[in-house]
Structure formats: C-alpha cells, structure tokens
Length: 405
Image 1 (spheres, helix red, strand yellow):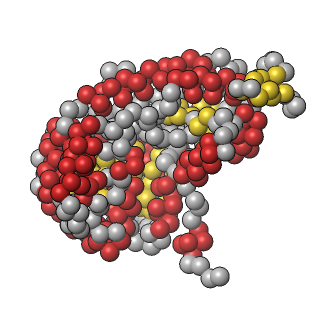
Image 2 (cartoon, helix red, strand yellow; image 1 turned 30 degrees about the vertical axis):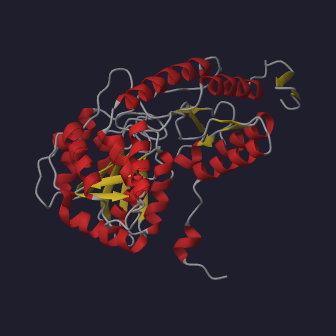
Image 3 (cartoon, helix red, strand yellow; image 1 turned 180 degrees about the vertical axis):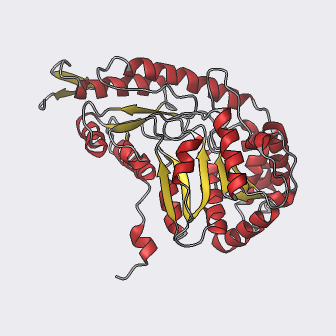
C-alpha cells in the first residue's frame, strides 16, 4: 500500500497507546497500576454537567460555528481578562476540539514546509509529530546547563533562517518545571524583535505549587496590534479534570484566528455544542474544584517525591506544577523504553519512557491518580530495580519471584 510521506513519518502517540494498554490489562483483570497517565481522578465540576444536561434536554443539538459558540467565547474572554490581564474581542478567540487541535491548527496556519518550530526539551510528545503534519521541522532545544529550565541563550543559539515559531509549555509536560518570569519576559521580547510566532501552551497554567502564581505572556508583550504573533493556548481538560470533553481554545490576532477557523472548518467543523456548553458551565461556575485539584496534586507530588528519594541513584527535580515527575533512572538503565517495558512485564506498572520526550534514561511518572496507586506503584518499581529487595513480592494473591539481577 502506498501511503503519504507524512503518514509514513508519523509515530503513534505513546501516551495514548499507554492508556489503551492499561485499559486492556484492566479488562483482563490484571492488577495494573497506571503511572503514565495524564487524567486526574477528580469528578467533573457539577456546573459543567448541569450545563451539558440542560442543553441536551432542549433537544436542539445542532452544528456550531467553526470557531465556537458565542457563550463560550464570552467565557474565554472573561477568563483571559482575569488570568492574562488582557481584554480581547470574540474575533481573537477560536474554540477547538481540545488544546491539541488548537495547537495543530495554529501551526498549520503559520508554518510552511521545511520551516522550523523550536521548543525546549524535554517536550510534549506531540510537538514533533505536529510539525511533521505541517511538512515542517521540529527543533528541540536542551538547556545547556542540564536542567529543565531553559535560558534565552539556549533558544537564541538554535534560531536560524528557517525558524518560524517557538512553542513554550510552562508548566512543562513532562518535567513539571515552571519557567521563570525572567525567561518568559525574555522569550516574549526575543520573538517580538525577531518577528517569530510565539505559542504559549498554557494548559497547566493554574495547576502550580508552592505558592507560585500563573504567568501571563501578555504582561511582557509590547506589540498588541493585529500584527502580534503571540498565540495563547488553553483548555478545560487539565484544570477542570474534563479530559474527555475535548474543548480547548486559542487567543491570537484576528488574522491568525481567521486562518485557524478556515482550517478547522474543513477539518472537523465546530466542536460539539453539548461539550461547549459544559465548558461554559465550568468556566462560569464555582471555581473551587480547580483549587481542590491543585491541592490534591501538590500533596500527591510530595508523596511521590518522598517515595522516590528512597531509591539510590535516581535524580529528581521537584516539579513546580502539572501531573508529572520526570525522574532520571539512567543509573539503572539508560534505555528508557527497555526499562519501562521491564516494569510492565515484571510488576504491571505503566510509565512513559523519557525518550518519547527527548531525554533518554528518564521515566515520566504521573501523580494525578490515587495515593494508593502512587505508593504501591513506587514500591513495585523499587522491588524490580533494587538488588537489595526481598526475593518475593505479593500483588494481591499473586506471588512474584525475582528471577533477574
């Protein structure tokens, strides 16, 4: 069969494959612990459910505008004013089928084949593949000092004649690192001076810890004209625990939004009216669920970090936010895919290999599940890797015996 060059170049999403694997193992009755996922266990806000149910009861489930319903645009405009300190018009907003679609539509609107988009490493697994879908080239930038916190010099060194855009994801998936105000100020200034598009992937921006506050790129921008190349991405999936609703958005200049709307109109049309109504309910409703989730995640992070400190040789940078800890396991195995598979085979613990995020030897471990899963999952991992572990381990009624060194 003859497939397109783009189709042949793409890899499946490793995180989605992991979710599928976890579901299959659970259906078989296996005692799997999924430490690779990005779905919080919190319930969907009641205001979101009521808003969706109310619209279902009208029986009027119709097409929506390709760029989103007016009620949701209005809620996003208010959200942008509150958290980004910036007033925008409805023409500056597009609603998409999740933040992922918003990012891809933005890239398709601005990138030509062979042009480059830069992003710090470690990076979200979809950035390189999204670049490929545009016929463009993704360029990861590893901070020169070996940390998860890039400096403007790191970005400057990788910018060339083909560079068209920069993506900044802070707090970062997978590292949980929240980039400094100075770096955000520097990257906004640099992109404005160089005429580069700057895409701020802010999907985790309120899920931050240790008293930190969300940072708005608009606070450091100088160009607020319709020539601004700043694009803000956000959505309801993470902060409202509404991953299955698939509603995200972008805020940008009118020309970019118009181009994204044309693209999305031919891809999927507008997102489901029911899901958009639910998003309106979440954004306009009681906000206590966001803070409750944030507190839960911060506590879960502390538990996971404490458990991981019991390992010898693991290097950990304490996450500033998100759902994830990105731990260096290279003392045990520098091949993260092999190590991740070993943990599945031996003790039914699912993790995401660091190679998928651009850093070999690491594993991404999620703490958005239950404390029980975190503690038991880390205990199982320790049993596999620690040569001083007891020879036997019980998972339920099943006895496991160490048959490797």
